[in-house]
Length: 284
Image (cartoon, rainbow, N blue to C red):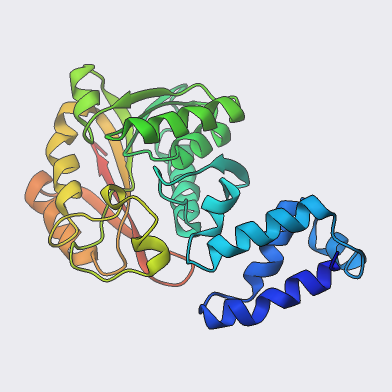
C-alpha cells in the first residue's frame, strides 16, 4: 500500500488538471483518517490502511468530477459543529458563520432584558444557522422552515445529533409561520439570492440544489417575500437578519424603505470588506 505522502502526491497533478485546489488532497485524507495535521505529518511515510486508501481513491474520483468534498464526506463543519449534508441542502459557507456571530452579538444587545427570544430561520436548509444559534445562545427558542421536505429531514437529523430542540416546518418561506399563528422576536433568513442568469462554478451548479441558490431575475425575489410577510410574523419589538449578495446593498436598502418606511437598517461587511449582511430593527 502507498504511504500517506505517496497517496496525497499522486492526486496533486490530477487536482491541478481539474483546477481544484491542491490542498484538497490533504484535507480530504485528514477528514477520512480523522487525524490532525500534525498527526498526519508524524505518520507521513507510513502505509495507509487498505480500507482508508480505498475510501480515499473512490472519494477523490468523485471530487475530480467537481463534486464538493463535503457531499463526498457526507458532512460539513460550521461554527465548530459538524453538520450532515447531502444534495438536498446547500453546503454551509464560512461567510454565513459571520452572520451567526453578528446575530449573537445583536441578541445580547437588543434583547438584553429578555429571558426568551422567539426566533425563526426561514429557508433553513441543513439547519446550520438555526442550530448554531440555538447551541450558542440558550435564551433563543428556535423554529425553522424550508420548502423542501428532504432538507427538513437533514436539518432534523442535525438537530438530533447536536441535541438541540427546534420546531421544523415544511413550507414556502414564512408561510408556515403565518399559518401557525406565530409571532417572533427574531427572523433570520439566508435566502436564495443569486440572479437567475448568473454563471456558477461547476461544483455549485451541477451538485447543489438550485431551489436554494437562485432568487429570481435580480436575486431579490425571496427578500421581497419575507419583507411582505414580516408584519404578520414579527412582534412589535423585533429584528430581522439576512445574508445578502456582495452587490445587493443599495437595492435591498431601497426595498426596506419601500416596505417599512424609516426603520433602522444596517448593512454589515464581512471579514473581506464586502457587504454581506443586512439587519433591520423595529420599535427602537
